[in-house]
Length: 162
Image: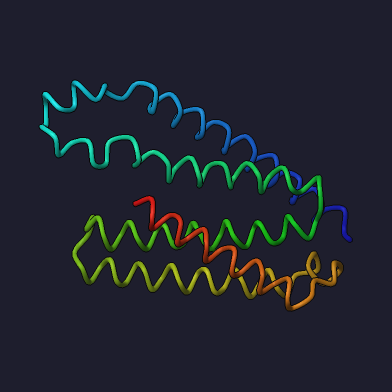
């Protein structure tokens, strides 16, 4: 494999690890500084307990996946490729869900951005599947489908933690 490509992948893996650690640390600090249950009950009543700290769990999952993907580069290249697929699938799913359900934009802009996200995701998938990095590894179709299913499970877990 070309040494320049390996250097780029190392930089990406370091970035994934560092960014994941920073974001996970920030989320843990925010989680530990949340109001107590008693303060929530006084402020919002009993209804405030329903989604109190559970909203942080989905970010723990995402940032942990980012760290694990970065670390997997040094463990196994096939695992790194698969976890990168899972991470990309989960990130684009998160973008679409946040745009549609949180209504940050009008509906038509959210739909357009969701479709644009799907197009970008498909383009990245095609580029990654045809890359020299993947061709040198000989990943079977069953392994590719396995990581696709794992990505779907991560998306389902994200939706469940919503």
